[in-house]
Image 1 (cartoon, rainbow, N blue to C red):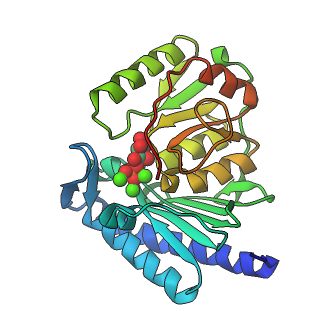
Image 2 (tube, rainbow, N blue to C red; image 1 turned 180 degrees about the horizontal axis):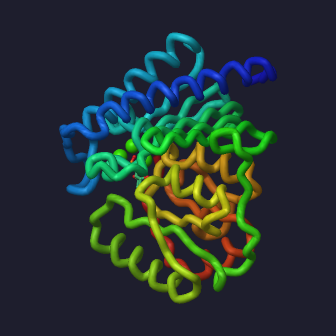
Length: 277
Ligand code: IPD
Ligand code: CA
Ligand code: CA
Ligand code: CA
């Protein structure tokens, strides 16, 4: 697909506008009582807001760009379809990243929107409405939070690093015990481990230079695409949990400030195969 600069600019502006709209809806529902349902496990939650925001954003995108493709978490969950990526412009959306935080009124809740063309992420927008933080990136042009440029930490060794690792929503006993062992082996060798409960925010924290890396097994493409570009444009790198090339449908990520930290972390992990999107 041929891509024109002014076309990208228009899509970027639309993405930021839609992120603000999604943010308004999230903010509006944030302090009210939520209607919570469960999906794959007792800890895999969805609310009316997740569904309503996704529907609203999908409708607005399809109206403005009828030839674009759309992949959204709640649409995929509802129809069980596989995510197939083409060269067309494709919006990959997580309407509410951090649904558990949302349910508990914890402010780390994000709308995440990555736009791909020719299978490359070219635009990433993550909005955290409760904290009014708008993270943006265009490929080759840096990444920003509320217009302020982001750059990764310069720490090059795991022993001096702060790392983000998540529990995730799977309650499969084998998956959980491997995750706990992985946390143990990374924690032994670094300054500390934290988690924000939102993959998108986790990647933004690494892009902001607060943490050296974020590791997770079990994420989906909509959790990471926008954050991957924001991290890359801040000088970071995204890889598979083995340290090899990342495949956005493979449900695993290490996003870090540098290659060396990725290599050190990868060597300490027991791999988990969580299938594909
Ligand atoms: C979840 C969050 C969480 C991560 C899970 C994701 P959701 O997304 O990103 O941080 O640990 O793996 O599923 O379900 O709140 O959109
Ligand atoms: Ca979810
Ligand atoms: Ca998510
Ligand atoms: Ca979500």
